[in-house]
Length: 202
Image (cartoon, rainbow, N blue to C red; front, side, top):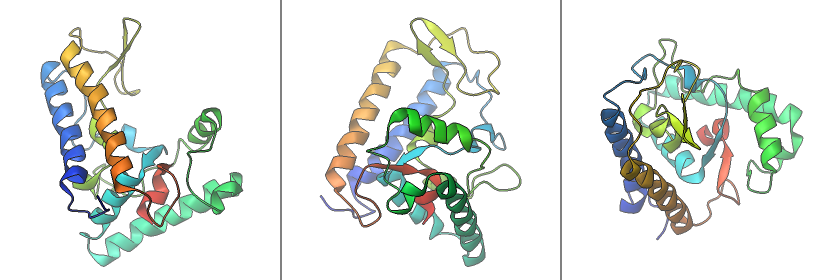
C-alpha cells in the first residue's frame, strides 16, 4: 500500500485512537479534566510518527494561508532552537537511531515549547488532524497496580480502573499503528518512523 492520504488503513488508525479515548473516558464516568481549552498537554515536544506528520500536513492544508504560515513559522523557529542544541538533527529529523535517554533529555529540555498549532485561546488549530498521542492523552496510566494521572492537571484520578478489555485494546492500537507505519513505507522527509513534533508541520 502506498502513502495515499485517503488510504482506509491510514484513516482507520486515527479513528481507532479517537474511538478508544471516547470509550475509555466514558468508562471512567467522564472523571478526567480534559476538555476544550485545557491545553496543559499541548506544551512540550514529543516524538510523533510519519503517519502523524502526514496527518498534520493535511490539517495545515485546510487552514487559511495566513494561519498556516504562522504555524509553519512557529515550527521552523522551534526547530532552529532545538537544532542549536542537537545539531545532528540538521541532517535528518529521524529519531529511530537515537538513544531513549537522549530523547528523554531533549523532551525535558524543551518542555516549555508549545505546540505550533496551539491557539491563544487554548484550542488546537488542526484538532481534527492531531497525532495519535494527542488523541489518546488524558486517560490515567496504570503500572504495577498503581494509577497515575496522565498530566499535572490530573491531581486526582478516578477510583474506577480502566477495564482489562480497554487496556488490551490500547495494546492492539499500538500494534495497529506499527502495522500502518510498515504499510506506508518510507517517505521523502525522513528515513525512519519517528520525529519530533515541530518537524511534523514542515
